Image 1 (cartoon, protein in one colour):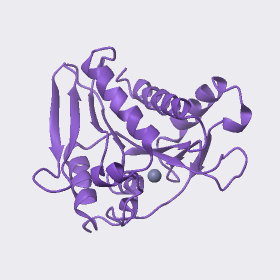
Image 2 (cartoon, helix red, strand yellow):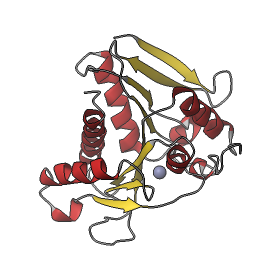
Image 3 (spheres, protein in one colour):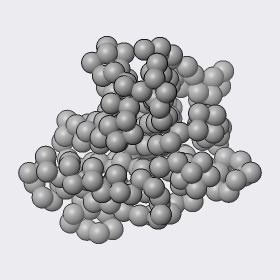
Length: 225
Ligand SMILES: [Zn+2]
């Protein structure tokens, strides 16, 4: 399987690697990004582990193309901070509008070039959605009307069967968040776009496992695995 390590925002202080896995068989393109927020470490670790498993061929694509950006905001990640300004409010809000930050601009341009069928944005959040409806921890989020909704619902059923503590179960949220990478992918690129949010207060190993389970689940639904 041809694999390429490439650079986003190359030549700038924001340069960060991404990985382009292309199967020999034609199929959908899936884009996975983590580390838009530098302190959401389980999602970053999950994306890095997926890259490692693809390199070692423990995971192999049946068809299509998978592009993974494991750490979008390297400088925020090094400091383990969310990032200033919040990168996830700087993506284009309307077609023809520019992104408000060099990194979101580079990431969005990459997404425009590859035209993903699926766009998965990995994050972490406070609180458990099962306990409080307003909490985003343990959720999949997409935009109202997004074509990912049926698959996201099925995947939540699948993962919840593997989680014995009911308070740790995942829920679906439909939300419009202008300036976020998911909303830009959903509205401007017409992608099936989903944000994965694990809950910060859970054990790190569990959060990484949930993130990997959900990304692999979407890859299976897209036919790549
Ligand atoms: Zn986040």
